[in-house]
Image (tube, rainbow, N blue to C red; front, side, top):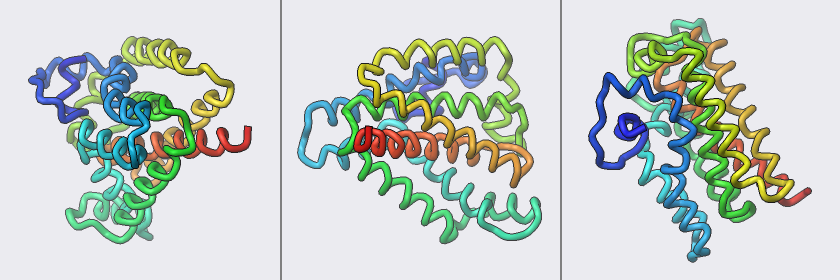
Length: 230
């Protein structure tokens, strides 16, 4: 897992680029690391805890996934054929669709956090990391970037271990029936993968980053509704 940290977090540790793709199974386990600080903020009930927790999250994971979401949204919203969509996604300039997607994701997370238990962000991050693993499992790379590099190392064994880890980590926090709603949040990530394949024919780092952000946000949103209505 240590070798994945430099790629998925801002934690100042050194990792081996070659070994990193042999540790893809550890994606779900990373959620314990990425959610630790923001979960502590929520548990302590600090003033503006929802805002501080989100800042703590992005301080830990960085803004790479958000940047990917912006590029992904620009590509999705462009009208035209697949080539035009891919070109828009790879454009260095962020369009209005990308800006809108980032703002909405941030707002939905900020306003969902006060409505859910303190451990919800862990569940959201767990789903987010597992959705990234599912995206890599498609083995349909778009281009030859980091996403393609990780996909080359993806196999059934890593997917099986990653799935087992995901299923083992969930029961630690399912202490209330309403928390089961978090499982539905994973469907938002699955849908984002489907949309990516439909529009681009494959997935690159931007698509995988978008999957991560959409899944986390979708999980928190589903849990917020569940906690109010169940």
